[in-house]
Amino acid sequence: ETGVTQTPRHLVMGMTNKKSLKCEQHLGHNAMYWYKQSAKKPLELMFVYNFKEQTENNSVPSRFSPECPNSSHLFLHLHTLQPEDSALYLCASSPKGPTSGNDEQFFGPGTRLTVL
Amino acid sequence: GENVEQHPSTLSVQEGDSAVIKCTYSDSASNYFPWYKQELGKRPQLIIDIRSNVGEKKDQRIAVTLNKTAKHFSLHITETQPEDSAVYFCAPNKFYFGSGTKLNVKP
Image 1: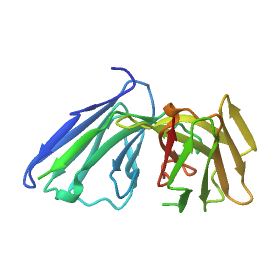
Image 2: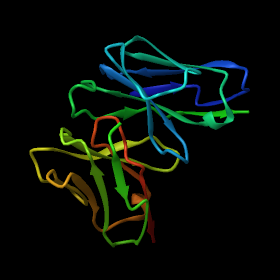
Image 3: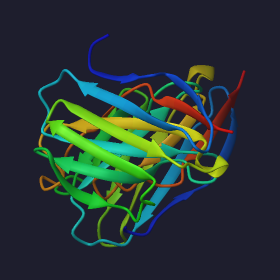
């Protein structure tokens, strides 16, 4: 698959588990994003990374921990989640980064997370 | 994040009719106005965008109009088809999206 890929596509975890979501972009983009999509909030920004540096944390609880080792990979580490964290987690990338102001976002297929 | 509002939240039209979705925003510094389409079970994808130095842009059956003074822009879909059924999002400030509009086109 080209473009933006995410693994796993589906994940079921208990509240005491630790898991990680992975995102990879093959587009040579500078910025990467994590979004949470649920029925309550259709597309809620979580984190923004520009050239591997975190530039935005939209008041996300510490049980979500992002990691960006390089501009092509983005992880979301999960621990001690709650059932209300069940949602579709979407990763996106954009060519120029958040400072450009006019930057199309390319989304991955998402990870459907269920917390029991 | 910025205050972004979309209206209506749901819209049902008959095939062949037109559909209009409006997005209002608060940040006067916004200069890029995209619309994304998300079909059921699929990822959001850009369908049309406009820069702040342009008032209108058209691409076949879809168009976007911008009123920077009033801080709103709209998506227009003409001659709607069942495959236009999806959720549409605006994103007037980089990465803060509107709440979405679910469009249903009835055959």
